[in-house]
Image 1 (cartoon, helix red, strand yellow):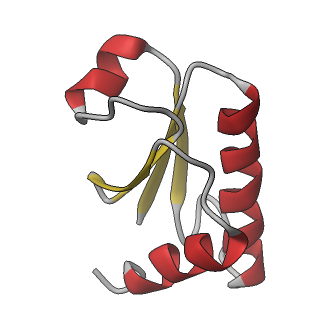
Image 2 (image 1 turned 90 degrees about the horizontal axis):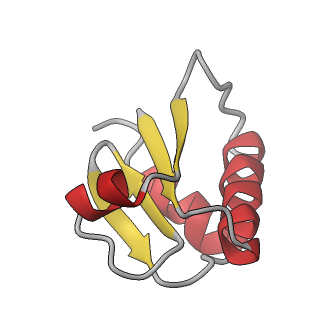
Length: 85
């Protein structure tokens, strides 16, 4: 599974990274083994995914959140829903 967080490095983008990392840890997932994580900061790359408002989160190339920091429960659910895809 590949998880991407989109944002230029603002406070909310950093919070989103923290929430996503916490959610993966809560689910017992290991980076590099169970999932790949990427922080996308280049605006041109963010635009390719159609993310207009940051922060954004994509799992396996599909944007699952945009324009806000997801709650920890939301992040867990988004990741859990995509574990076996």
